[in-house]
Amino acid sequence: MRLGVKLVLVAVVVVAAGVIIGFYVSNLTTLAGSPAYSVPVQNVNGHPVVNLEIQTVAAIGPKLSQNPDWVSYLIHTQNGWKRETVWNLPANATVHVTIYNFDGASGLRNPYYGRPQGMVGNRVLIDGKPANAVDPNEASHTFAVPALGIITAIPGVADDAKNQCGFAPCPLSNAHRTIQFVFHTTTPGHYRWQCFVPCAAGWIFGFGGPMQTIGYMDGFLNVKA
Amino acid sequence: MAANPNAAPAQPIDSTNHGLRVVIAWLVLSAIATPLVAIYVGPLIPPGNGSVQGQGQTFSNQVMTSLVTPVLCLMVVFFGYGLIRFHARRNEAILDGPPLRNDSRVQILWIVITSAMVLFLAGFGTYELLKDGAGGGQGPNPIAFPANHQSAFQVQVIGQQWQFTYRYPSLGGMESNQLVLPANSVIALHVTSLDVVHSFWAYELGVKADANPGVDNVAYVETKGPMLFHVRCAELCGLWHGYMYNTGRVVPSAQFRGWAAQELTIYHAIKPYVNRPADKGGAPYSHIYLPAPERRAG
Image 1: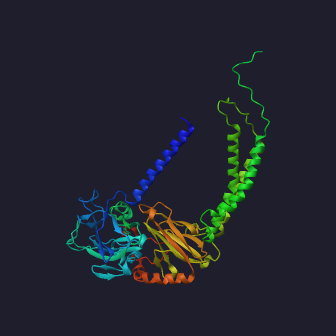
Image 2: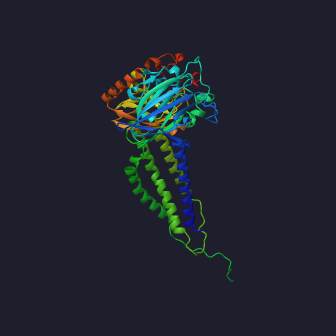
Image 3: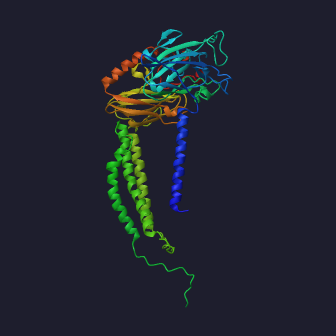
């Protein structure tokens, strides 16, 4: 085989490998094989408005995961609660977020995250009452979109609460806390969201498993034009 | 006597002084390339002139690149000359070259030159590091200080999966997810982590320091004029490592005070909780900032 042909073959293989690796990394860091849920959009006076209804549970259970004891977020879809954490949202929209938390408190590692920020008014409604701070000791999880500056701690259900939820999906008849806030999406892009509480029970310092796996305590807001 | 038909063909006598040619070509190429690299390429090498330390790193890179240029030229000329002058043409008989022989002058010259370069670079690098810390993390007990480091503006950099936050002890321990620094100031960055090992890399400022749990890693930087700079985590730290970045700002003092006042109003709501004793779930400002992991883990 001539040297020129060999060089061309090597170049083609290198480029092909680069493209394959690029696609793999791109998929891993953006969608990671997790199905994306398009949240229904309402048109209010020509302005896109979205209601994002999610819940956090201490254990996802056997119906929704092969890891039944993993902590997780779920989203309320037209087909019920789903363990999907990649959500399609419109750009420049108003997003009304309601989080139902069925998990107990484990505390914030960094108390600073007890300060709600980045949403309208820099405050949240906790069980219907406005709050501009969450006691770090009472926090169960956080919902944070760092690139948008959004973070709120989510207070946990009292340890002695009655009728606690065993595993997901949890009905609202179970003991829970409700957190509500409003934020605005901006330009199109992939915005990752995550929990800042090391809440993965059973892992070293709570940082493994569901904290490191998209589809549980991490996900993306795919903001689309 | 009849000639042996299997004997190797006689080597043609080559009276050309190839060594002299290579040396002349090398000197000419180096004389042209080195100043060009020093003047036009060196200043383009990161991190740039955003801070005194960044400027020092750029200068160091400029010196080292200039020094390495003649070495690169020698390799290019040596291999280029060899490939052009000594390659066999198609269908040409392959002849062995002249035997290689020791030349103590070349060997001594090579050892002297390379030793001098290595020793110079070691001395130069040590001087540049000790001059002002060069923007690197020096651990809890730094040994290299910039001038006026006693009055340095303190900022604590906290790495956590997966965001950097920043505490300002001179502002009552106020914490923010934005890194804003006053211009023309000496800054002492106290870098630490709440979980795994991160690395704080303020690229355009020329600052890089590992963030280890329970360790106060101090890095000094002297800011210059207003600018934007990028902060990235430079240590693979988990799922969202690639997203662990933000943009910092160096701003004039008046603008810094305005920003601080605005951030303080936001921070005010959480301050009482943060300032509680650690055993009550608080985290009063401390250079060693590590909440009890047992209590905080899920």
